[in-house]
Length: 322
Image (tube, rainbow, N blue to C red):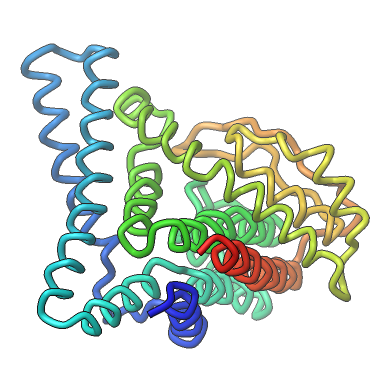
């Protein structure tokens, strides 16, 4: 079956069903693999070499290579094995995995919870809901800060959960898509600049930056196209993007955040607490409007518009090259 059609079916499944909680997700298995191998490597580092920066970086490299290669190899191997039984069964399985790799509906559903909590004026519940989406401390966030955190998450994860997975699915099918999810999961689990993971997670963090470099910029361009929809300021989105696209500690996160901030005339970024310590980040955009729950809806619209345009772009390029 043509890959464009397979991915189209997967996109439709994602938009219709998202990630049901009862359905076991491959990322959970990847996460268990990371946690188990990480513990073993940390024990190896401490027993054989003591706490040493160089050895932790090497251990982090081993962790990344084993997990990413394992995710690709296991996915490709299972698909090959199933294809020997029946080719159509392999196609169905690959479509199913493609559907699980995409996360547009899941991101919308989770951000909807924050939106509803804020609309119901339940700040305590909104803080809990947003805590599942962000790494920052959320216990003392105001309504505006909760809304900002949610908008930032939707804008940033437009790359991680939507555009990049779609990009790698077109590039290499479910095996490469699963390898990307492994990179992304490694970064979310060990790619932190804290005492425990500063060096062990360095390779994973750099790989995530590299894997998202092109998708983040494609996502910014497709989101810019979406910013000319009614209700957004497309001109300001463009000028804010040009000015603030590098205003982040990550080389990729500000790409889509800058577009979203300009399109909705709000300010994102700034200093936040992580694990009890303040982390300074540049401001993105200008505070023409106070960020509120309605801007979460706006971020969702920008994400979905970017998703649709990116599918047409990737599908068109794949069709022309195939």
